[in-house]
Amino acid sequence: MSTTAEYVDLGTEAPNVIGWKVTGTLTAEDMAEFLARLEEVTADGGKARVYIDMTGYEGWELGVAREKFAHMSTLWNSLERVAYVVDKGWMSGAIGLVDALTPMHLHAFASDEAEEAKAWVLSD
Image 1 (spheres, helix red, strand yellow):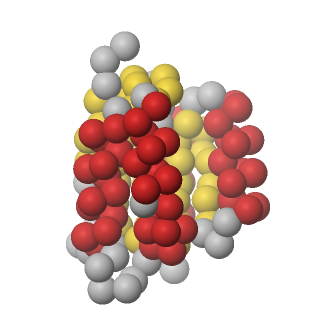
Image 2: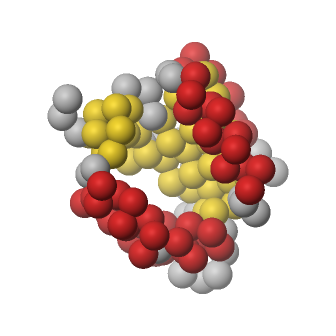
């Protein structure tokens, strides 16, 4: 399957909110671009809120892990809230486990709950 990673508009002007949709196999290049954007929106020391639609996600290249490890402090310290829209049950469980082990708030939403996911990311 081909890869598509694109930014999506969540209808807000908030500079710390990122909307992203990933389908197919995530590449290291896509992850590097996302991490650069995350670093850009949190350069002032603030925290980001992220909406990630992973409906149709099929996995990742090995280089994605390298990118994540290289930017682990950014991920650990820059994310306030991340909503994942997923269509695979195992992903919900994995996201719940990571949520329990990190200081950020992660939440998995089913593919028919995309609007709820957006609302959660944008809520106070």
